Image (tube, rainbow, N blue to C red; front, side, top):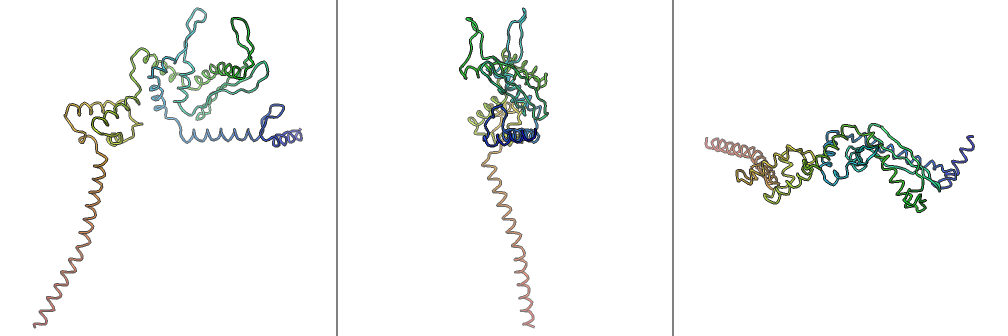
Length: 306
């Protein structure tokens, strides 16, 4: 048995990465895939998700009306209306939750059907969900069954069948309360209760400060003490209050923000003051030496007179 395995391995090496007659993949391909998996796990451990920021990103995404309109599906079944999160919302959840690999793979194909696998894998917690399913190369039409032969039609059919399985895998990975909150945010957006995402509103605020008062985003970040990526709703409220104060003429931009040019000038003034102090300090010993020299000359002159 071991001789047969060794012979198969040598044949695979000679084939240079092609698939053998029995459908087994070359060992080198499996090694490459294993290294890719190890890399994903390493990166997930190096950069673990921040659940607070992930939930905030999901909420901001759900405030987009284009996503909210396609966030849920609905269809009648047994005299009832069945609804739930769509594949589009599931993809947004996975992308913003972070450290999740998802998709589908075609495992096998013959003339009549294909075998595929949908999966979702939380690389950080090593939680994985899989769905293996069979897809016949035929579709139902009003005129009966239509057999598909075009590779493109077959792929689109598999992708369509896989999307529902991928959605189920993703929703099995992400906590249920996160999914419920996302659906609720989408419903608020559709009802007109939600404003635009925080990122968009901050961008408009930065542009307003730049256009009206020549205050840059860097100067605003300096005022708060951290980058704009960490801003929350409270930061936006503070910016609105400052803008209202500037518009009413109660304060000036210089009262709130340090201009980049002024900051550089202050640094230059501090350097000049330091240089002056250094020169003054180094010149004092010379003055003492000069005074001592004068004193010695006066003493010598008095001795000569005596």
